[in-house]
Length: 153
Image (cartoon, rainbow, N blue to C red; front, top):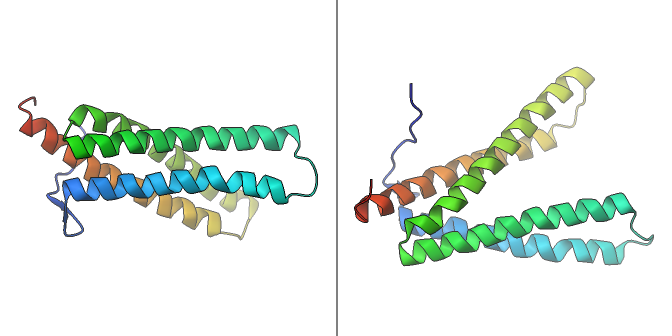
């Protein structure tokens, strides 16, 4: 049994190209916001940051940097019609989807075992998983469309 990504022709009444560009722009905006917010939080903190907090912020900013760079590369690929620039974004988003899916199920198990009643984090994880799933679906179909139009299948 092979896994196949469902074929779609449009994204919310837009073409696949426009939908891919919208996802790329949205993720670039998230990237810019994520890089600008941590320095503001550190500046407003009264105490000096601990080593663990600094490491955590560096890790978050590194992930956001990867997120943003791949989003910009995907935007260039969508604008030029080059499927080879779109593929790295799909692979990175698939890894993020896997990470958030595992995180969501881990939170569900923790909530069930520890009788933890705050389910806001689980809902956030569910929304993120749905977003990544839909964005991968749209961009993968756009990638498939670009690949077929270039003659290489």
